Length: 312
Image (cartoon, rainbow, N blue to C red; front, side, top):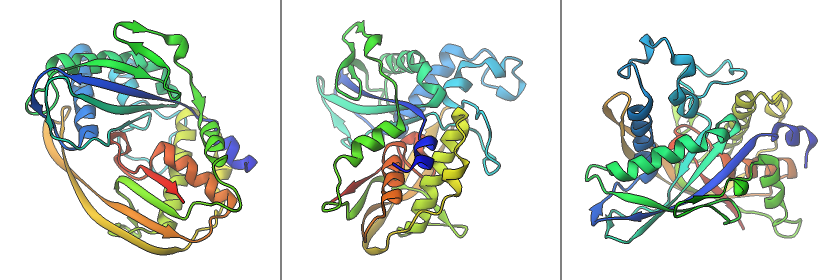
């Protein structure tokens, strides 16, 4: 692995696999990543906010557990970051069913990054409370059936928590494990975006895929995570990675509605999904793109946006 990129990928992470059991017949939102994020935020506010959700007036803002979990601060804030910070976690759910009956299961993944890995218990409490209060407009109730680590070993099984199985890795380890799949004779030729990608290029949101923009976005995401954890990754950010050619693509627009508990208002998130066939990927670029697989790219990553896979 490129030593410059390897150093930049010294970012801690853990990916948790949740299985929820639905307790009643219900209708759940199609985009559950957004719904789960909103629900987790609401449960954290109900359990921890002492200033009637008026963050600007709160004397205890610097010690707020909600800020530490959902809006954790950068160790070194990038100059281009001007909005609120929410980089330490990603919620993934590719189950788009709406109708659920009692006994059905719903699976999703929670990716914790950098310093946020220590706040697992707060996320766990919030998800447990969300199950008791209900998810979505129909308030569908559930309980946590199982939580597994990246290897499938149980961290929580019914009522038992096994923190010795809470094994934190580094992004460089994920990249190395993915590199072992590919060799000079078998290389990825496609990128499949399984969740919406929201990216700007030359000041405009993309309506079709652009490899230069994707490469820049991965570099930016890794650099932001370096700054979040305090890793010095400037060299990898400034490195020019060869950009593979797009041979063919299929892109279509996606619009996702979400409700913000903090702002008490609805909004729409836009992006594109689809796939693109690409030419030869140089080794350095392959390593960078494999890192992007794990951490997601573009805007709205905390809701699960910007997830892709490299495939043959």
